[in-house]
Image (tube, rainbow, N blue to C red; front, side, top):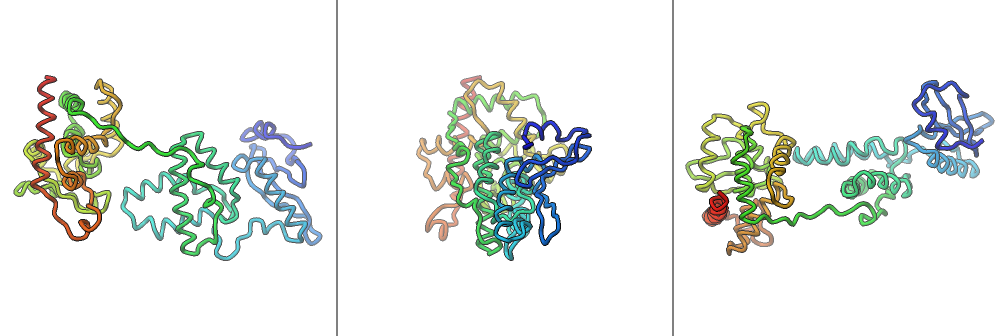
Length: 389
Protein backbone atom coordinates (compact mmCIF):
# COMPACT_ATOMS: atom_id res chain seq x y z
CA UNK A 1 0.00 0.00 0.00
CA UNK A 2 1.41 3.40 -0.99
CA UNK A 3 2.33 5.95 1.62
CA UNK A 4 0.49 9.25 1.96
CA UNK A 5 1.44 12.56 3.52
CA UNK A 6 -1.68 12.34 5.70
CA UNK A 7 -0.47 9.01 7.11
CA UNK A 8 3.04 10.33 7.78
CA UNK A 9 1.72 13.47 9.50
CA UNK A 10 -0.42 11.33 11.81
CA UNK A 11 2.69 9.39 12.90
CA UNK A 12 5.39 12.06 13.01
CA UNK A 13 6.57 13.09 16.48
CA UNK A 14 4.01 10.95 18.35
CA UNK A 15 4.32 7.68 20.32
CA UNK A 16 4.18 4.86 17.77
CA UNK A 17 3.67 1.11 18.24
CA UNK A 18 2.90 -0.03 14.69
CA UNK A 19 5.14 -1.73 12.11
CA UNK A 20 8.71 -0.40 12.11
CA UNK A 21 8.71 -0.26 8.31
CA UNK A 22 6.10 0.89 5.81
CA UNK A 23 6.62 0.55 2.06
CA UNK A 24 5.63 2.90 -0.72
CA UNK A 25 6.73 1.78 -4.18
CA UNK A 26 9.85 1.54 -6.37
CA UNK A 27 11.74 0.21 -3.30
CA UNK A 28 11.03 3.35 -1.23
CA UNK A 29 10.11 2.72 2.41
CA UNK A 30 10.07 4.50 5.75
CA UNK A 31 11.55 3.35 9.04
CA UNK A 32 9.63 4.54 12.11
CA UNK A 33 10.93 4.68 15.69
CA UNK A 34 8.72 4.32 18.79
CA UNK A 35 8.99 8.11 19.24
CA UNK A 36 7.56 8.77 15.79
CA UNK A 37 10.80 9.64 13.96
CA UNK A 38 10.35 8.87 10.24
CA UNK A 39 13.28 8.14 7.92
CA UNK A 40 12.97 7.50 4.18
CA UNK A 41 15.05 4.64 2.80
CA UNK A 42 15.76 3.14 -0.61
CA UNK A 43 16.18 -0.65 -0.69
CA UNK A 44 18.21 -2.41 -3.39
CA UNK A 45 20.82 -5.13 -3.90
CA UNK A 46 24.42 -4.41 -4.82
CA UNK A 47 27.02 -7.08 -5.49
CA UNK A 48 24.53 -9.64 -4.28
CA UNK A 49 24.02 -7.94 -0.90
CA UNK A 50 20.94 -6.05 0.35
CA UNK A 51 21.44 -2.32 0.92
CA UNK A 52 19.31 0.20 2.75
CA UNK A 53 20.21 3.75 1.76
CA UNK A 54 18.91 6.65 3.84
CA UNK A 55 17.20 9.24 1.62
CA UNK A 56 16.17 11.81 4.22
CA UNK A 57 14.14 12.43 7.34
CA UNK A 58 10.52 13.51 7.35
CA UNK A 59 9.27 16.30 7.28
CA UNK A 60 12.43 18.19 6.15
CA UNK A 61 12.38 15.72 3.27
CA UNK A 62 8.79 15.38 2.05
CA UNK A 63 7.21 12.25 0.60
CA UNK A 64 7.24 13.91 -2.82
CA UNK A 65 10.95 14.77 -2.43
CA UNK A 66 11.76 11.21 -1.41
CA UNK A 67 9.97 9.80 -4.47
CA UNK A 68 11.89 12.16 -6.77
CA UNK A 69 15.23 11.25 -5.15
CA UNK A 70 14.50 7.51 -5.32
CA UNK A 71 13.54 7.92 -8.99
CA UNK A 72 16.97 9.43 -9.65
CA UNK A 73 18.64 6.63 -7.66
CA UNK A 74 16.81 4.00 -9.71
CA UNK A 75 18.10 5.64 -12.90
CA UNK A 76 21.65 5.30 -11.56
CA UNK A 77 20.97 1.68 -10.63
CA UNK A 78 19.68 0.85 -14.11
CA UNK A 79 22.89 2.37 -15.57
CA UNK A 80 25.01 0.12 -13.36
CA UNK A 81 25.99 2.95 -11.01
CA UNK A 82 25.71 2.45 -7.27
CA UNK A 83 22.83 4.69 -6.03
CA UNK A 84 25.12 5.82 -3.19
CA UNK A 85 26.75 8.03 -5.80
CA UNK A 86 23.62 10.19 -5.77
CA UNK A 87 25.01 11.79 -2.60
CA UNK A 88 28.67 11.45 -3.52
CA UNK A 89 30.66 14.63 -4.00
CA UNK A 90 33.10 15.18 -6.80
CA UNK A 91 36.31 17.11 -6.14
CA UNK A 92 35.59 20.81 -5.88
CA UNK A 93 31.92 20.35 -4.92
CA UNK A 94 30.64 21.41 -1.54
CA UNK A 95 27.37 21.25 0.35
CA UNK A 96 25.55 24.51 0.98
CA UNK A 97 26.67 24.39 4.61
CA UNK A 98 30.30 24.14 3.52
CA UNK A 99 29.85 26.96 1.02
CA UNK A 100 28.47 29.17 3.77
CA UNK A 101 31.37 28.29 6.05
CA UNK A 102 33.96 29.20 3.39
CA UNK A 103 32.14 32.42 2.52
CA UNK A 104 31.87 33.39 6.18
CA UNK A 105 35.51 32.70 7.08
CA UNK A 106 37.10 34.14 3.93
CA UNK A 107 34.76 37.06 3.20
CA UNK A 108 32.18 38.05 5.83
CA UNK A 109 34.62 38.09 8.76
CA UNK A 110 36.42 40.96 7.05
CA UNK A 111 33.28 43.12 6.93
CA UNK A 112 31.92 45.53 9.54
CA UNK A 113 30.18 44.04 12.59
CA UNK A 114 26.77 45.45 11.56
CA UNK A 115 27.09 43.87 8.11
CA UNK A 116 28.12 40.56 9.66
CA UNK A 117 25.02 40.64 11.86
CA UNK A 118 22.81 41.33 8.83
CA UNK A 119 24.29 38.46 6.81
CA UNK A 120 24.04 36.11 9.75
CA UNK A 121 20.36 36.85 10.39
CA UNK A 122 19.26 36.88 6.75
CA UNK A 123 21.35 34.20 5.05
CA UNK A 124 23.51 32.21 7.42
CA UNK A 125 20.91 31.23 10.02
CA UNK A 126 18.21 30.64 7.40
CA UNK A 127 20.19 28.45 5.00
CA UNK A 128 22.72 26.66 7.22
CA UNK A 129 20.69 23.46 7.64
CA UNK A 130 19.16 23.32 4.14
CA UNK A 131 20.00 20.59 1.59
CA UNK A 132 22.19 18.69 4.01
CA UNK A 133 24.55 16.03 2.60
CA UNK A 134 23.86 17.14 -0.98
CA UNK A 135 26.42 18.96 -3.14
CA UNK A 136 25.07 22.43 -3.76
CA UNK A 137 25.83 21.96 -7.46
CA UNK A 138 23.42 18.99 -7.48
CA UNK A 139 20.41 20.74 -5.91
CA UNK A 140 17.82 20.93 -8.73
CA UNK A 141 16.12 24.20 -9.60
CA UNK A 142 12.79 22.68 -8.49
CA UNK A 143 14.10 22.35 -4.93
CA UNK A 144 15.28 25.97 -4.87
CA UNK A 145 11.87 27.11 -6.13
CA UNK A 146 10.14 25.07 -3.45
CA UNK A 147 12.38 26.54 -0.75
CA UNK A 148 11.69 30.14 -1.80
CA UNK A 149 7.96 29.44 -2.22
CA UNK A 150 7.92 28.53 1.46
CA UNK A 151 9.63 31.79 2.41
CA UNK A 152 7.38 33.85 0.13
CA UNK A 153 4.38 32.71 2.15
CA UNK A 154 6.01 34.04 5.32
CA UNK A 155 7.29 37.36 3.93
CA UNK A 156 7.55 38.05 0.21
CA UNK A 157 9.95 40.99 0.60
CA UNK A 158 12.33 39.06 2.83
CA UNK A 159 12.20 36.12 0.41
CA UNK A 160 13.60 38.31 -2.37
CA UNK A 161 16.28 39.76 -0.09
CA UNK A 162 17.25 36.22 0.91
CA UNK A 163 17.56 35.20 -2.75
CA UNK A 164 19.69 38.25 -3.59
CA UNK A 165 22.07 37.63 -0.72
CA UNK A 166 22.25 33.88 -1.29
CA UNK A 167 23.10 34.47 -4.95
CA UNK A 168 26.01 36.60 -3.71
CA UNK A 169 27.23 33.66 -1.63
CA UNK A 170 26.96 31.23 -4.54
CA UNK A 171 28.60 33.58 -7.05
CA UNK A 172 31.43 34.16 -4.57
CA UNK A 173 31.99 30.40 -4.29
CA UNK A 174 31.85 29.91 -8.06
CA UNK A 175 34.31 32.74 -8.70
CA UNK A 176 36.78 31.09 -6.32
CA UNK A 177 36.41 27.68 -7.97
CA UNK A 178 34.91 26.15 -4.82
CA UNK A 179 31.93 24.82 -6.79
CA UNK A 180 31.56 24.36 -10.55
CA UNK A 181 28.02 25.74 -10.83
CA UNK A 182 24.66 26.02 -9.08
CA UNK A 183 21.11 25.89 -10.37
CA UNK A 184 20.22 28.78 -8.07
CA UNK A 185 21.83 31.19 -10.52
CA UNK A 186 19.09 30.28 -13.04
CA UNK A 187 16.38 31.52 -10.67
CA UNK A 188 15.40 35.05 -11.66
CA UNK A 189 15.23 37.57 -8.84
CA UNK A 190 11.98 38.91 -10.32
CA UNK A 191 10.44 35.44 -9.95
CA UNK A 192 10.75 35.43 -6.16
CA UNK A 193 8.89 37.64 -3.71
CA UNK A 194 8.47 41.38 -3.99
CA UNK A 195 10.91 44.22 -4.29
CA UNK A 196 11.44 45.95 -0.90
CA UNK A 197 9.68 49.26 -0.71
CA UNK A 198 11.80 52.28 -1.51
CA UNK A 199 11.17 54.99 1.06
CA UNK A 200 9.56 58.14 -0.32
CA UNK A 201 8.11 59.75 2.78
CA UNK A 202 9.08 63.41 3.16
CA UNK A 203 7.97 65.05 6.39
CA UNK A 204 6.83 68.65 6.19
CA UNK A 205 8.12 71.28 8.63
CA UNK A 206 4.75 71.14 10.38
CA UNK A 207 4.97 67.34 10.77
CA UNK A 208 8.55 67.59 12.01
CA UNK A 209 7.36 70.15 14.56
CA UNK A 210 4.66 67.75 15.80
CA UNK A 211 7.27 65.03 16.25
CA UNK A 212 9.55 67.44 18.12
CA UNK A 213 6.72 68.41 20.49
CA UNK A 214 5.94 64.72 21.11
CA UNK A 215 9.60 64.09 21.91
CA UNK A 216 9.69 67.07 24.29
CA UNK A 217 6.54 65.86 26.05
CA UNK A 218 7.77 62.27 26.31
CA UNK A 219 7.84 61.16 29.93
CA UNK A 220 10.56 58.60 29.23
CA UNK A 221 13.77 59.96 30.73
CA UNK A 222 16.23 57.67 28.93
CA UNK A 223 18.79 58.99 26.48
CA UNK A 224 16.45 57.73 23.73
CA UNK A 225 14.67 61.07 23.84
CA UNK A 226 17.76 63.22 23.16
CA UNK A 227 19.03 60.67 20.63
CA UNK A 228 15.96 61.11 18.45
CA UNK A 229 15.80 64.86 18.90
CA UNK A 230 19.33 65.13 17.53
CA UNK A 231 18.54 62.68 14.72
CA UNK A 232 15.66 64.91 13.67
CA UNK A 233 17.90 68.00 13.51
CA UNK A 234 21.10 66.44 12.14
CA UNK A 235 19.60 63.91 9.71
CA UNK A 236 22.33 61.43 10.65
CA UNK A 237 21.92 57.68 10.43
CA UNK A 238 20.67 56.10 13.64
CA UNK A 239 23.82 53.98 14.03
CA UNK A 240 26.14 56.99 13.61
CA UNK A 241 24.61 58.83 16.55
CA UNK A 242 23.57 55.83 18.68
CA UNK A 243 27.13 54.46 18.75
CA UNK A 244 28.86 57.85 19.13
CA UNK A 245 31.34 58.49 21.93
CA UNK A 246 32.47 61.65 23.71
CA UNK A 247 35.79 61.84 21.84
CA UNK A 248 33.96 62.33 18.54
CA UNK A 249 32.73 65.79 19.59
CA UNK A 250 35.22 68.66 19.34
CA UNK A 251 33.57 71.49 21.30
CA UNK A 252 36.41 73.94 20.55
CA UNK A 253 36.01 73.78 16.78
CA UNK A 254 32.35 72.66 17.09
CA UNK A 255 32.74 69.63 14.83
CA UNK A 256 31.25 66.14 15.22
CA UNK A 257 33.46 63.56 13.48
CA UNK A 258 31.99 60.13 12.85
CA UNK A 259 34.81 57.55 12.54
CA UNK A 260 34.97 54.82 9.92
CA UNK A 261 33.92 52.24 12.53
CA UNK A 262 30.51 53.93 12.97
CA UNK A 263 29.97 54.89 9.32
CA UNK A 264 27.83 52.70 7.09
CA UNK A 265 29.78 53.67 3.98
CA UNK A 266 33.19 53.23 5.63
CA UNK A 267 34.08 56.91 5.39
CA UNK A 268 34.86 59.62 7.95
CA UNK A 269 31.94 62.05 8.29
CA UNK A 270 32.30 65.61 9.61
CA UNK A 271 29.30 67.70 10.60
CA UNK A 272 29.11 71.07 12.38
CA UNK A 273 27.81 71.30 15.95
CA UNK A 274 25.45 74.19 15.23
CA UNK A 275 23.70 76.41 17.75
CA UNK A 276 20.47 74.39 18.04
CA UNK A 277 22.21 71.10 18.92
CA UNK A 278 25.09 72.52 20.96
CA UNK A 279 23.21 72.69 24.33
CA UNK A 280 22.11 69.06 24.00
CA UNK A 281 25.64 67.87 23.17
CA UNK A 282 27.08 69.86 26.09
CA UNK A 283 24.64 68.24 28.54
CA UNK A 284 25.54 64.79 27.24
CA UNK A 285 29.27 65.47 27.57
CA UNK A 286 28.85 66.94 31.06
CA UNK A 287 27.36 63.62 32.19
CA UNK A 288 30.92 62.30 32.02
CA UNK A 289 30.15 59.08 30.11
CA UNK A 290 32.29 57.83 27.26
CA UNK A 291 29.17 56.44 25.57
CA UNK A 292 26.87 59.38 24.85
CA UNK A 293 23.63 57.42 24.57
CA UNK A 294 23.86 54.57 27.10
CA UNK A 295 21.20 51.90 27.40
CA UNK A 296 20.70 49.49 30.29
CA UNK A 297 24.43 49.60 31.03
CA UNK A 298 26.26 52.91 31.35
CA UNK A 299 29.19 51.77 29.18
CA UNK A 300 27.11 50.31 26.34
CA UNK A 301 25.01 52.23 23.80
CA UNK A 302 21.25 51.88 23.48
CA UNK A 303 20.55 48.75 21.46
CA UNK A 304 18.72 49.03 18.16
CA UNK A 305 15.58 47.25 19.35
CA UNK A 306 15.16 49.67 22.27
CA UNK A 307 15.55 52.68 19.97
CA UNK A 308 12.98 51.28 17.53
CA UNK A 309 10.57 50.38 20.34
CA UNK A 310 10.78 53.92 21.73
CA UNK A 311 9.81 55.44 18.38
CA UNK A 312 7.03 52.92 17.76
CA UNK A 313 5.40 53.98 21.01
CA UNK A 314 5.92 57.66 20.21
CA UNK A 315 4.33 57.33 16.74
CA UNK A 316 1.06 56.12 18.20
CA UNK A 317 0.40 59.49 19.81
CA UNK A 318 1.15 61.69 16.78
CA UNK A 319 -1.62 62.42 14.32
CA UNK A 320 0.34 62.32 11.05
CA UNK A 321 0.60 59.70 8.26
CA UNK A 322 2.93 56.73 8.70
CA UNK A 323 6.62 57.61 9.03
CA UNK A 324 9.84 56.27 10.48
CA UNK A 325 13.08 57.65 11.88
CA UNK A 326 15.01 57.15 8.63
CA UNK A 327 12.59 59.59 6.95
CA UNK A 328 14.33 62.42 8.85
CA UNK A 329 17.22 62.12 6.37
CA UNK A 330 15.08 62.34 3.25
CA UNK A 331 13.05 65.17 4.77
CA UNK A 332 16.17 67.20 5.57
CA UNK A 333 17.56 66.95 2.03
CA UNK A 334 14.25 67.52 0.25
CA UNK A 335 13.21 70.49 2.37
CA UNK A 336 16.64 72.13 2.17
CA UNK A 337 16.83 71.59 -1.59
CA UNK A 338 13.61 73.58 -1.91
CA UNK A 339 15.34 76.34 0.13
CA UNK A 340 18.15 76.51 -2.45
CA UNK A 341 20.85 74.53 -0.58
CA UNK A 342 23.22 72.99 -3.11
CA UNK A 343 23.38 69.17 -3.55
CA UNK A 344 27.08 68.85 -2.65
CA UNK A 345 26.27 70.40 0.76
CA UNK A 346 23.23 68.20 1.49
CA UNK A 347 25.18 65.11 0.40
CA UNK A 348 27.84 65.93 3.00
CA UNK A 349 25.13 66.51 5.61
CA UNK A 350 23.88 62.97 4.94
CA UNK A 351 27.41 61.59 5.23
CA UNK A 352 27.60 60.56 1.57
CA UNK A 353 30.77 60.57 -0.49
CA UNK A 354 30.60 62.76 -3.59
CA UNK A 355 30.66 61.02 -6.97
CA UNK A 356 32.91 61.24 -10.01
CA UNK A 357 36.03 63.38 -10.04
CA UNK A 358 34.94 65.18 -6.86
CA UNK A 359 35.22 61.93 -4.92
CA UNK A 360 38.89 61.64 -5.90
CA UNK A 361 40.13 65.21 -5.65
CA UNK A 362 37.74 67.21 -3.50
CA UNK A 363 37.97 66.33 0.20
CA UNK A 364 36.30 69.55 1.36
CA UNK A 365 33.37 69.11 3.81
CA UNK A 366 31.77 72.58 3.35
CA UNK A 367 31.32 72.80 7.13
CA UNK A 368 30.33 76.48 7.04
CA UNK A 369 27.75 75.82 4.34
CA UNK A 370 26.47 72.83 6.31
CA UNK A 371 26.15 75.03 9.40
CA UNK A 372 24.10 77.65 7.53
CA UNK A 373 21.84 74.92 6.11
CA UNK A 374 21.36 73.14 9.44
CA UNK A 375 20.45 76.39 11.22
CA UNK A 376 18.01 77.34 8.47
CA UNK A 377 16.37 73.92 8.76
CA UNK A 378 16.14 74.04 12.58
CA UNK A 379 14.79 77.61 12.53
CA UNK A 380 12.01 76.50 10.19
CA UNK A 381 11.10 73.55 12.43
CA UNK A 382 11.07 75.63 15.63
CA UNK A 383 8.99 78.36 13.99
CA UNK A 384 6.32 75.69 13.39
CA UNK A 385 6.77 74.40 16.93
CA UNK A 386 5.85 77.86 18.23
CA UNK A 387 2.82 78.05 15.95
CA UNK A 388 1.57 74.69 17.21
CA UNK A 389 2.23 75.73 20.81
